Length: 270
Ligand SMILES: Nc1ncnc2c1ncn2[C@@H]1O[C@H](COP(=O)(O)OP(=O)(O)OP(=O)(O)O)[C@@H](O)[C@H]1O
Image (cartoon, rainbow, N blue to C red; front, side):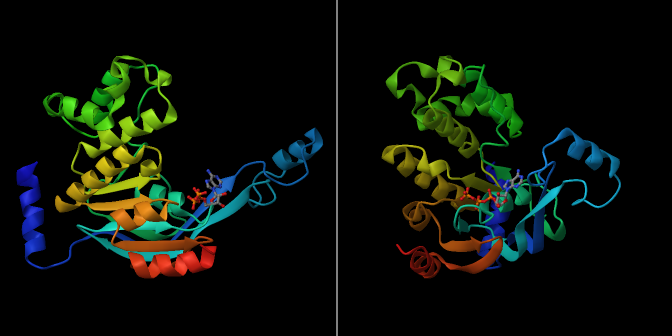
């Protein structure tokens, strides 16, 4: 890991800013089937089937234009907060950067494989926490030796065993907070080129949030880029130095955390 990172650090020491994610006039559109309003009868469904081959709206496909022409460049070592009201397109933008949603128009370029916390670590509810640590590690491309070496660290970080031997129980017996903590701990065990976190910090208690913020700072030192989606302005302030503010799918502001949050707080009336 150290060797792999030394090249990146050298690049940083040159003073050159290295781009990790570039979004260029990005548009993301969801298509929802059978969402035409008020027409739920069998004859309406039949007529839609007969109309097959015509345009989307006639077939009862509704489009949701979730991200509208967003452009930005993210650099190595940055921690970027994504803020905006409910439904403004934050999660959609993260999923598009992770390559999970196709662009309708525009492009996303990434350096390395971005990891979206919680999705890339495909955990299984019926398996024990222990098995899931191994599975999640393998899914992120870690070797069995690497996972074995980091296992205890991951379990300790998650705090899952603080109240008993939960790590040997199936994950379905965990509370949603415990499951989120384990997912974060597995994802944070690896040094990521681009790590994206959707609200994960809001789930843990204060002690866990502190550990997470500390780990995010470490990940940034390893020259990665971190994106954090959160409705908690304090987590954004504590973790990020730059903020992208989305509203109705459009990038409303992009700048230093304090500047953007000041405007956002005016907008939300806080
Ligand atoms: N799978 C989907 N199919 C259709 N529309 C979707 C889907 N997921 C999200 N949307 C729509 O896309 C828009 C953006 O949603 P998104 O989840 O990206 O917002 P968000 O900013 O992350 O919201 P929140 O703060 O509430 O989590 C919303 O209008 C939402 O209804």
